[in-house]
Image (cartoon, rainbow, N blue to C red; front, side, top):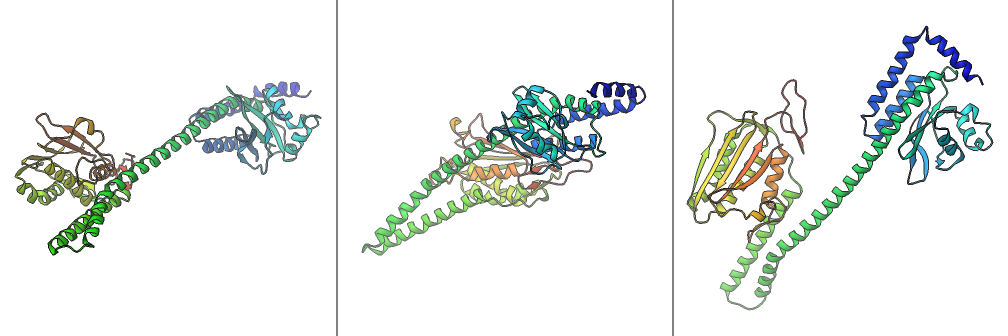
Amino acid sequence: MLRPLERKVEDFIDRFFYRERHQFHLKFFEFTRTVLNILDLPTLLKATVDFISQALRVEKVAVLIADPASGSYRTFGQKGFMGLNSFAKESPFISYLKKAGRAVEMEYLKDHHSLRAEVQPMAAARSSLAIPLDWEEGMLGFLLVGEKQDGKSFPIMEIEALEAMAPAVAMAISRALLYQDLKMKDQQMMQSEKLAALGEMAASFVHEIRNPLGIILGSAETLRKKLPEPVQAEMLQFICEESERINHMLSSFLDFAKPKTPAFREVDLRIILEKAWELISVPAREQKVQVFQEVPPEKVPMFLDPEQIRDALVNLELNALEAMPQGGTLRISLSQKENKDVIIRISDTGTGIAPENESKIFNPFFTTKEQGTGLGLPIVHRVVKNHGGTISVASNDGGGTTFIITLPPPKGILGCFGAVGPAPAGEKETKC
């Protein structure tokens, strides 16, 4: 009854305080634009509760959202309200709020016979307003706003501002719930993929370790018989060799399963290439493989773990030698692009990689070698990735294979174990 008169009084006052009213609406408009960019539900609800509390000078604000699991509207975000009851989706109060489609004041509802049981506890908790959050799927939830700190009733301007803001909040909550659902499904899918990969790795590892174990058991059974000493010596040799093979497989598996944290420091990449070449030079000469290195004359400073990068290069170079049992050519080149990315190429003239295997070579336990563990290239791939780089493979036109490693310049890239190198002045760290 008093609302029409109150509206006329406010309209009259607006003529004198138009600037303040404009600033008030502008504040709500700016928040509406901000809230639509928030996808994290807890962050969104906290921002909404804090804004309403500050803008309207109230101590109590709550956001209740429909919960499919419980079939009710329950509190997802609040400030000042403690122990709020949940509301069944078809309760009298919820039905009334859905039908009203706009803000309702508790003062006018607490004596309503059919709503008394639900409204009186809210009124006792000093709730003043309930604003429905309607969206495409219906009433997504509602805002519950407590009494103003000065004890006065809410002016029409503030109620209308809340009603105008409600659709944007409802849309933002709908998007945040969808994002949360997709994120959860993505996590479940990733977990399923991890478990499947773990099962595949375990099966491959058991398969690989079974062969040497069979040889060891067979040799041990043979030793139990009374055989000539040369035969016994041969069986013992088999046992030692296969035990060493199992130990190597276990070491490789542990290196892959529990990688060491890189120790980044500034080094000249040319020196690392030189040390890697020294380690493979003897087997290269024995196999009559010519090795050619192409490196720039000037220093190539990089922030990386020199031991891990050296081991990765040695792994690739030894693989190249194994692909050239009758001799050949191994080319190792180092270059730097205009954007300072470093490119390392390791190219051989060996047997090459079958096209159908190119997409599998970085998979754990995949190998075409009789004595291989299938973990060398996956470990190389992980080392390069943890340095913020990439590795690819290509077949050469004249036969053989080329591995290409690209390492980024030291710009504070974050690998799996932290910063690859310090960020230059004025630049922020970025994730790889």
